[in-house]
Length: 74
Image (cartoon, rainbow, N blue to C red):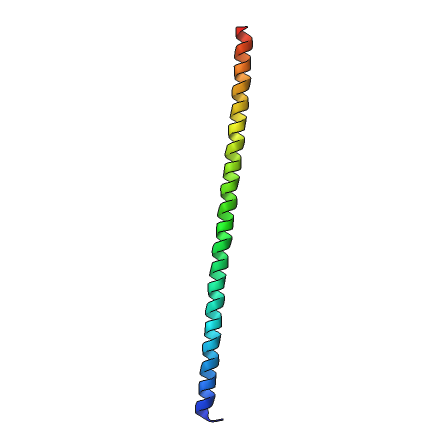
């Protein structure tokens, strides 16, 4: 095998490795973006759940206060 041919083969192999590395990096960034979106969605879901719990608690308190007021007026 001539030196030129060996060099061409090495260059081709290096190019393949670079391409593979770029693809792996791209996939890693896509995976990281998906993971971040999953975390954001879970946090948003938790915020909504907490808000709903607070609203339910406030509604119960208002109901108790209304019942007390009605009992006092009776």
